[in-house]
Picture 1 (cartoon, rainbow, N blue to C red):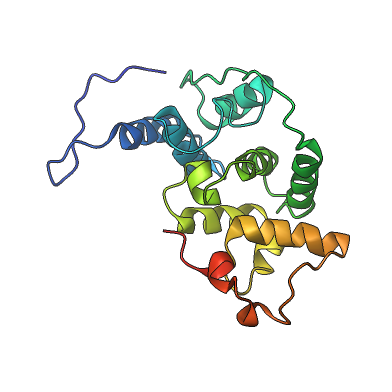
Picture 2: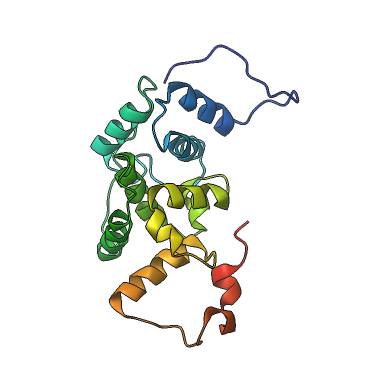
Length: 197
């Protein structure tokens, strides 16, 4: 990545965080394509120790390089292939990825990368927006709406996104494990619909 000799400070005189500085640098290389901003947020967080994604964001080294060259040409941001082990979740990954890809907006190639990144983040244990390294749940809602609009439109009650995705998989399989006749009557309502902050 290019080195920057300029000292950047915000308008209130506070030095931006390393994450914010890297985000701004990445946007300086951005090409104006869909998902530039969201991918820059995810990358900046990951490179600064945030989120739960591997260095290649779960894309694999070749796809990561293609994504980086397409969205941030000249940035020289690298994504080394992590050492993969079999965690027994390949079927789960495949089902999530298939669900997301089936609902792509079909507007840009980056939707496929975003689907793979979201799938990788779903394997972690925190809120999905945090595991992705996004900065708020609002960022994740934007990601879902822009990349998978038909799927996002089904989340009419603002269910937490990871729970929503897994619920969609259960519905596809005809599995309804919830004992309550409606979500509002379920004892776990706050687990699925409560705030994620």
